[in-house]
Structures are given as C-alpha cells and as structure tokens.
Amino acid sequence: MKKRLGIVIALAVLATGAAIAQSDPIAQRKAILKDIGEATKPIAAMAKGEARYDSAVVQKSLATIADGSKKLPDLFPANSKTGGDTAALPKIWDEKTKFDDLFVKLTAAASAAQGTIKDEATLKANIGGVFGNCKSCHDDYRAKKS
Image (cartoon, rainbow, N blue to C red; front, side, top):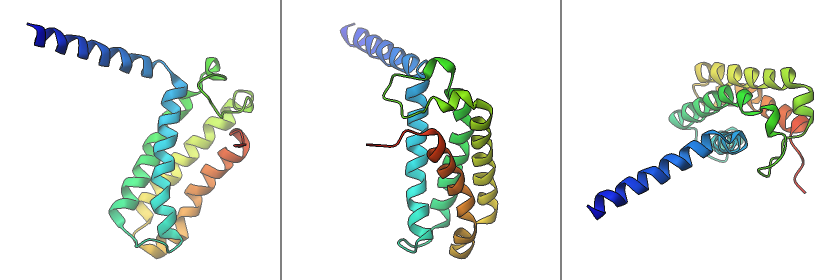
C-alpha cells in the first residue's frame, strides 16, 4: 500500500511539473533553442573540416532544427516578454510577423538541406542558408550576452 501511494505521489509530481513546463512559453522556447543550438555544433564542426562528415548526424541535426523551429513562433506570446531570464528583445513583439517569418524560413532551409546535403561538399555548399537564418534572428532579436 505504501509503495502504491509513493508511486501515485511521484506520478502526480511529474504530471504537475510537465503541466507547469507546458504553460511556461519561456522555458519551452529556451529548451527548443538549446536543442537547436546543440544540433548546430556537429554540423558546424563538419563544415569547418574539424570533424568527419557523418550523414546520420547531419540528418538528425537538421531534423531537430526543422522540427524545433516550427514550434517556436507560438512560444513568444505577448505575456512572455519578460521573466524566465529571457534574452528575447522587445523588438520581437513590435515586429512579430517578421520575427515569425524567420522561423518559417529556418524550417524551410533546414528541411531543404535535409534533401540536398549528401556529403561534405554539399554540406559546405548548403549549410550557410540554415545558419544564416539563425544568425539573422540572433542579430536582431536576441539580447547580447554581457
């Protein structure tokens, strides 16, 4: 009986934590952006010749970027301008349509790259379109780290 009660309590705590995370757009977007950032690291290393080309890693990383970037526009509601140690600049909400379009472009670029990149040469020739979209958002809409 005590074991069953412990399991029920643990499940309730997990469910509550999941519900809180789902209702916190800042935490959600930060997690997705972190995943995207991690996904870019091996691709960048391959493009620079610092790591061996690995098609499976490239495809998985591009899928992470495409899938994550699809979710991001909805995670910048007006009530998430502050708090949660966000680096999001207020300019996002002043230019929300333009900002959201950057994620549409990133999703399209990552998806297109999945079909185009087949080896190191095509990686080097095509990854700039993906990374360029990341950079444009960071340059215009992310607070600089001090």
